[in-house]
Length: 262
Figure 1: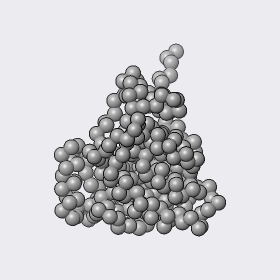
Figure 2 (figure 1 turned 90 degrees about the vertical axis):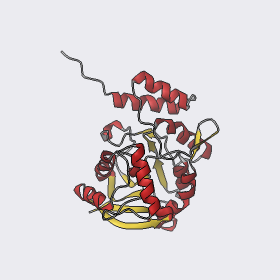
Figure 3 (figure 1 turned 30 degrees about the horizontal axis):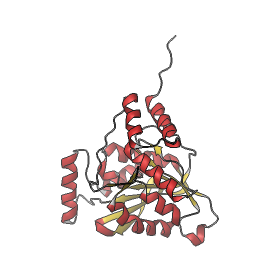
Figure 4 (figure 1 turned 60 degrees about the vertical axis):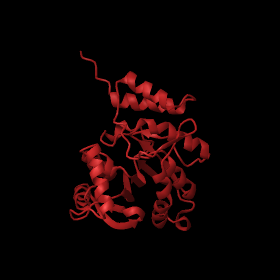
């Protein structure tokens, strides 16, 4: 009788969680772990200006600049006066350095945040931001590959009021975007909201010139990257029972797209 095959993705995720919950959490341990397990993910980051702060904390200037404009969008859809005393839950896919989730959790105390990240070297940074903040409405970060089945994610719940995705769509293969909408259709509550943030094309046009140049630079680094057309996102969303509710203009030629169930 043949033995059932072990799931390497699930094994890796479990081992990462053990590292994050131990006292010896650092980037070196994460890399050693994945060498042992045979996993070496794509660690190409989009922000070349990321700086190391302290033992594990990473600092991205772009995240520092856009955290307040994005918070304003979140507060528009989840105002304090209407939600204080509520117990809402947010799943952040692609949490980056951890700067965003700390800022949002501080200002939305009625919401519990579950950060996650594919780039393994970012996990210790997120964990250190959480520990330093002392906030109790942020869970430990999860190692999540958006293209893997949800049952491999080690989520503590299967239903979220908000799914947040910042600056992932244009710096990942198209399949990641497709998977994002597929997973959101499963995990969003009935009145839940998916918010995606970043630069986009629209009706086949990228503007202004700075976004055209940015798109070219992304594709030069990885041909699978690049600004996605909102029309294409609407099509994928519709195939997964979601619709584009609103487009919010943001600083630096970015947009926040608000998605809800059809």
